[in-house]
Length: 89
Image 1 (tube, rainbow, N blue to C red):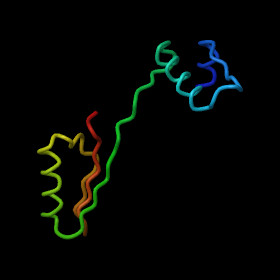
Image 2: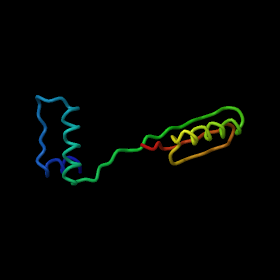
Image 3: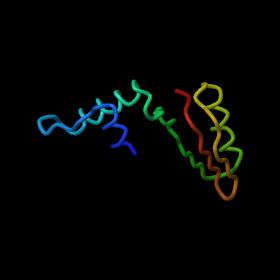
């Protein structure tokens, strides 16, 4: 799918350039051409707090106060507190 889209926009691989620079160039050209909708993935962070649930909620509240707590994806209270969330960027 990606190789076909790269061919459609006229992008070809060159042996004299590094793979990283070519990949970045190919992604940029795909975004410009709108051949494939590409967007940056949101970073996810998993936090585990041992001890009481109360301690885990304190951590969540601190993150919420700083404005860094994005969308909460998972929250578990079994044994230890575990929080998975996506960062705002």
